[in-house]
Length: 258
Image 1 (tube, rainbow, N blue to C red):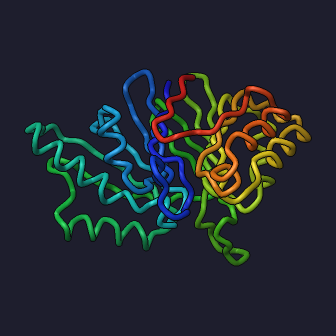
Image 2 (cartoon, rainbow, N blue to C red):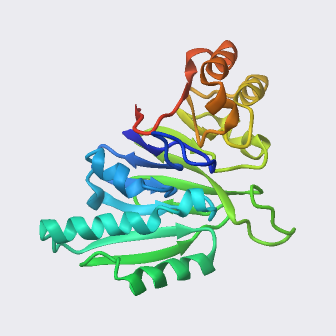
């Protein structure tokens, strides 16, 4: 399977050649799943040559603008493609949100603006802590975190994901308040960890995983923050001094084969 990085930037001011976080998981059977929908995710997927008709589900880790701001454009691109192609095959796209209220607003605006693609059924589902999505091709586990703090006893509104498919495991951090929130998943191991660096120091994270002796085969940082953006070579060097060549930093357009 492949991972396509559509956007690698955190919520900073605009940067040349980087857009906000979004990525697509492509399975060998052709199915695709999108995680987060930062600005220009639709444009990036289209220009990368991905068959966007095969994206059957979108998972939003949390509703900050740098993770959801490109969702409307994504639907606009798909709608335009279907019209140009004359595609009339019935299709479905399931949107998975951490908040019911946001889900309702998004679908209402898509309908109001006429951006739901023709012959396309759009559904919404609520992420739940400990919940699972399983369509027979991929299993996606949801873990709530405190990137957006919520009072005790109330549901989380920010999530991380553990994805299992084709005998591989991928962890996507989303944005987390503390890497400790992912300790059990990291210590259980993964073929690929996609970790945000917008709110953490990458070398410190690498030192923590080494301390845990976490069996992570590969680590790819994305959602880049100031430390990497300002000092990319130095930050990479520090990380590799700890975990070696297992560590890399994503660019827009990066492709990972697992």
